Length: 237
Image (cartoon, rainbow, N blue to C red; front, side):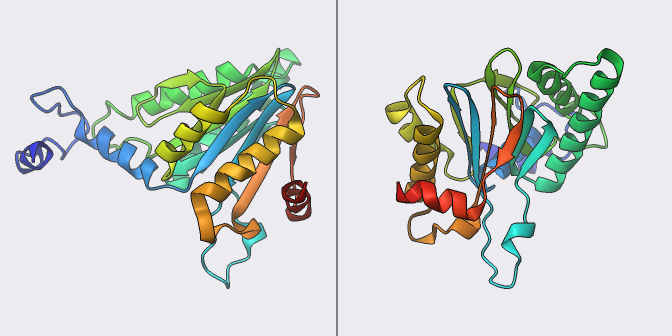
C-alpha cells in the first residue's frame, strides 16, 4: 500500500526522485525485474568457478543451442545474468573491450575485480542520471586470477564476492540449498553434479538439458562450456 501511495504521488516517474522515506523506486523496480529473470547459479570449487543457468527454452521451434546465457568476457572470466538480457549484453561488451585494452596496454590478463568495479561504476551512474533508467539486470561474474573468484553485481551498482550465489526467479530457494549443502574445497566433478542437482530441484518437471547452460573457468585461466552430452554424462554418474 505504501508503494502504491508513492506511485500516486509520482515518486517513481524519474530515477532522480527520492521518496519521503529515502527510496529510489525505479531502482527497486529494476531489482524486481531481476527476480523475474531465469535462474543462474555460481559455485566456487577447489580449482575454479562454475556457472550454471536456465536458458528457459520453452518454444519447441527455438534452436536451444543458439540461446546464449553464459558470456566470455576474457579467457579467464565468464559471466551470466538474470533480468533484461539485452542490458547484460551491453555490460558484457563493455567488459570485453576493457579486458582487451588491458591486455594491449599491460600485456597481462586483467584482474577479475577490475572488470566488476568498472561495470558497477556504470550501473551506479545510471541510478542517478535524469532521462535514463537503471540497468535491469544482475550479473554473476566468475574468473580466475590469483585464485578463483565469484562476484555478484546488482542494478544499484553494489558488488559482493561469494563462495556460492544464485540470482533470478528461484534465488531464495536456491540460496537455502547453497547455505545448507555447499562445501568449500569440493572437486570439479562434485561441484558440477551439485550445481545440476540444484537446477533439477528448482525446475522440477520442467528440467531439461535443452534449458541448461554450464561453463567453468579454472586454474589454467581458461574457460570451457560443457556440451549437452557432457552435462548428461555428469548426471548419470
